[in-house]
Amino acid sequence: MNGKLHNELKSIEKEPLTTTRIQLKGYGASQYQARIITQSLTPMGISKRCYTYGVTDVISSTRKILENSRIHLKTRRNLESILNSLLDCLDNVVNVPFIQSTDPQLSQVSKELFKKMSTINRYLTELNANIATLKGKDQ
Image (cartoon, rainbow, N blue to C red; front, side):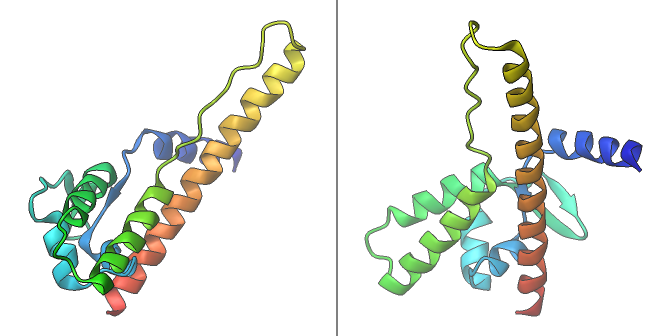
């Protein structure tokens, strides 16, 4: 079983973060908002009959829409909520190397811990995306 888990970890780490319109609906967007957010974007691929878009591209598109001062307050709050959900998907943790004069064993343990935490964060992101997909399909 460890071999399977090890292979799964490698495949997850290499995949770029993507999202679909259905997932955006699961994060709280209406069908119209999901279309407007992704309208100017080029799809990265297709997954289960849905176009996939890069999360960073969707974030920048959402920020660009939020720059419009004529957006209603309710829509603005909704888009900000979606933006926060997408930002949570990104792994914004920076690995700070220990000083060379510290204990080498402590340094090695910290590196392993950081790798495990990154893997767990990636799994949680994938799980949240699956939940958003299920929510989006129900709407």
